[in-house]
View 1 (cartoon, rainbow, N blue to C red):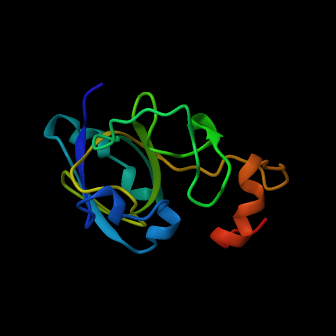
View 2 (cartoon, rainbow, N blue to C red; view 1 turned 90 degrees about the vertical axis):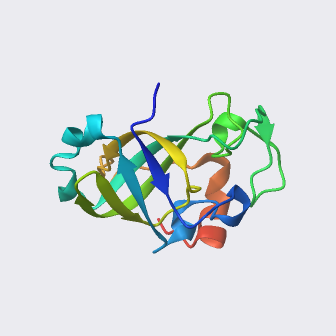
Length: 150
């Protein structure tokens, strides 16, 4: 894989940024897309949110179990969003403000400045409202810690 662009944010270090994009509400940033990929931005500006896949380039640790920030139990890495992953691939859903040339303006940011961007996908709500979503161990935390509702 090779990056398609670079994410720019106010966060110079990982420990200064929000743990999730929901905690980065209204924090603004932008992405500079490399020139050979600009044609791929056509029609992106019609979406309100986008999914960013990026290289977690500052974290070189790999752990198969980790203790999530809001829990006191160690969980398997694939049941968490910890950055200490085998392939160091991160994902974030951000709000899309606008696209101007090769620059994408975004908000609700939880990504460190200078992060290599691997891909962009439009966010689509594909789960039927009648579907039951199971959040595993996170279920007990969603309302208390994150203010999420069913």
